[in-house]
Image 1 (cartoon, rainbow, N blue to C red):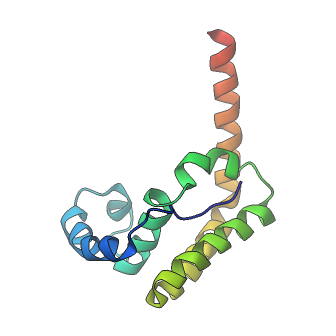
Image 2 (cartoon, rainbow, N blue to C red):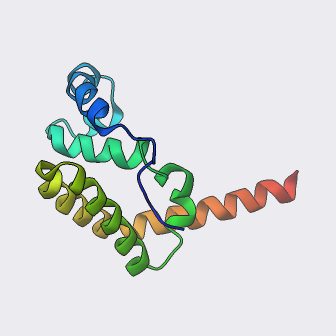
Image 3 (spheres, rainbow, N blue to C red):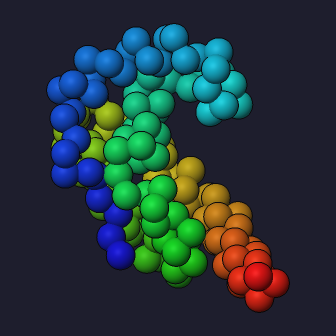
Length: 124
């Protein structure tokens, strides 16, 4: 399993819509409510990770891996993002640090999801 951006991503179109979404969704977005000082660039990177890559489909199996493997794959995805727009490079580095620090929590949650799904299957 490898994290990667969607092949059909039209980055130019994404850029055109991003600022408008950022400003209009500011009061509705859970992410922006939790982090009201988040920069537009950081929000853009999180949008690319969570909505324009295979991260959501793979997240629970992704975080079950060893930390080094997770971080290497996330780093690869963030490099791919930074090649789309060099102005996102600094935020990509910051976000990589965020994922390094939050690995333990993500990893534990992924193990819980597996346990919960197994229990649900055994009950059904």
